[in-house]
Length: 88
Image 1 (cartoon, rainbow, N blue to C red):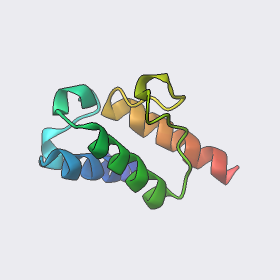
Image 2 (cartoon, helix red, strand yellow):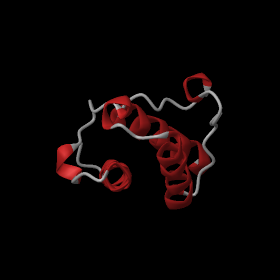
Image 3 (tube, rainbow, N blue to C red):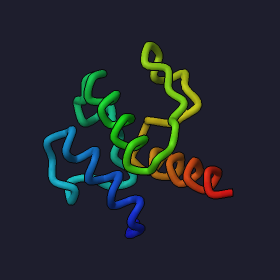
């Protein structure tokens, strides 16, 4: 997981989780990081701003959105997908 996109996403999540990027990997589940809903929203806003994308997200029911927030690897894949759709 050495892509610039992955590194950027990990850095954003690590900042919200008050961890070092090296503490996180693709298999890291966001639920295990103890992030509250405000931190999750901050992550989403940071991803949108950083990658100039719009993330489909239901703040009231995070598990019901089209954007998979379950793990860092899922977020990386979803962001890369949105970025490639935008570029097409």
